[in-house]
Image (cartoon, rainbow, N blue to C red; front, top):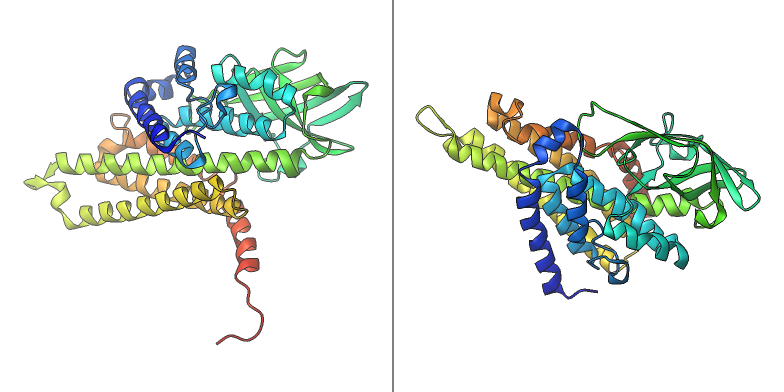
Length: 383
């Protein structure tokens, strides 16, 4: 593991990179609904695509806490870029790190770190979102191959991905496969007109009798949902938690900046009590979200078994705070906040999506309720 000082230096490098290479272009990428290939190359050169990967695979070896802090710096400037790191480096990359064979790790992780291959996580389908166990995409064994048929939808970076971590259902249960774009029968259709993360190259991916060699199975037969997908979503939720914090922090800074610059009734609006109340609430909410994210990071670092529920709580809370603080930032900006002239309009849109991806807020409420009913139940009468 990289020393603390070095990790702090890497996070500072990420902040400077995001300020220079992302901030000036984020609104344009959002408008064009595309992220330039040369920018992804720059991310890869800095190793920001795979911050948690070991050095042997071309990563930065950041521990979970500093991985989160790096994601925050990137996410403050562009949510689509944060999505790329989440999907490519965490959902796909960390799944291969944990469940892949040594051959699989050697084959793909280095190229993922270098940006030569982009990974996408193909779980959701037209009829299966929160109810992921009901996926209809099928696989059948044929000799030393598996034949995959079906459609995946809402696949971030599916339009440009080279490798799809794909979940399919068969007689042995849900199984995970690593499917390469150039296999016969893989077709992609871009999805445009998104509310947010517009530069994330969202796509529908169709698999028509795609032959996948058995050495591309990730994990064991039947463990695709309970092991591979479950751990992948946990990694994704951790990144989204920090993404929510990033949106809240950026919205807070935007509202403060505007309140100190905007004048009404002969004085700066930050002097009005109601505006100060909004800012005060935003500070408290954002600091609380940060505390939850950092607690989850520390627990993940020591591999505490309750890190999963802490991660879910951080994702749930930070995504809701992002929505609340972004909405208040728009309110303080007034009519100007409803235009693309200020970034709060985009932050407001981005925040909503965070309550849906990697487990909706309602699914996470159920998860936390189940935990609470077990953890805090006491037998006997208590007054």
